[in-house]
Length: 229
Ligand SMILES: CC(C)(COP(=O)(O)OP(=O)(O)OC[C@H]1O[C@@H](n2cnc3c(N)ncnc32)[C@H](O)[C@@H]1OP(=O)(O)O)[C@@H](O)C(=O)NCCC(=O)NCCS
Image 1 (cartoon, helix red, strand yellow):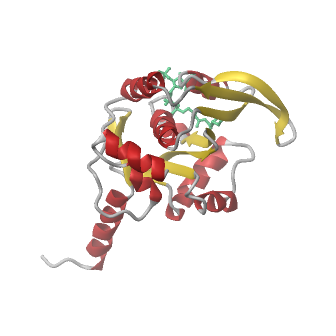
Image 2 (image 1 turned 60 degrees about the vertical axis):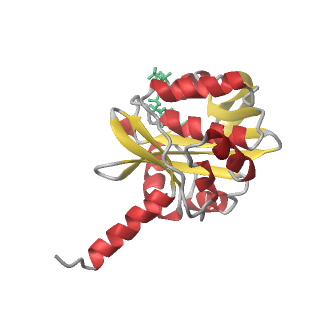
C-alpha cells in the first residue's frame, strides 16, 4: 500500500519526538515520555497553566524562557496512546543554583506521579550543570506542592510577602547539597517510587540542548549535562 502525505507527516512527527525525548517513564502505570518543551507544545501547556494558576505564565513568558536554552531546561510529559501533554516543568540554572521556575500537571492526571519526573530530570540537569542548591517559590497555601517539594529535600526558609498578584505570600524553599551523592540517591528513589523510569538510548543527532540529557551511559550523560542543560 502506498503511503500518502499524512503518513509522511506522522513519520516525521515520530522522528522529531524520538529526537527530543529526554526520558521514558511510567506514570499511572502507563508509558509516557519526557520531551524538550517546544513552541508547538504551548497551546497544551497554556491550557494546563491557565487551569492551574490564577495568574500563570503567558505565551510570551514561555517564549522568552525557551529562547534561553543555555541556562534553562523546560520539559513536557506526554502520555502515549493518546499522545497528550499532561504536565510540564522547568528549571533555570545559574551560579551553582537551580531555580525551579514552573511546574503543573493536568488536573485529570494528578496524584499519579506525573510531577515527579518533572522534578527529577530538571534537578538532574541542574546537578549536571554544577548546581549545588535548588530553590523555588510556592504559594503559602499550596500544600500539595509543598509536600511534593519536601519529598525532594526542599525546606521552607522564608516568605516573600504578597509575591503572587500582590496578594498571596510565597514560601521560599531551598534544597542544599544537591551536588552530593546522597541527593542523587534521593532522585533515584523518587523516580523509582512512581514507576520504572528508564533512560532511552543515546541519540545520534543533537539539535536541541536538552538532547544532551539523553543517553545510556551515566558518565556520558553527566558530561554532556555539564556542557549543556
Ligand atoms: C503540585 C502538583 C504539581 C503535584 O502534581 P502530581 O502529579 O499530583 O504529583 P505526584 O503524583 O507526582 O505526587 C508526588 C508527591 O507530591 C505530594 N502530593 C501531590 N499532590 C498532593 C496532594 N494533593 N496532597 C498531598 N500531597 C500531595 C505527595 O507527597 C506525592 O507523593 P505520594 O503520592 O507518594 O504521596 C499538582 O497538584 C499541580 O499541578 N498543581 C497545580 C499547579 C501547582 O501548584 N504547581 C506548583 C507551583 S509551585
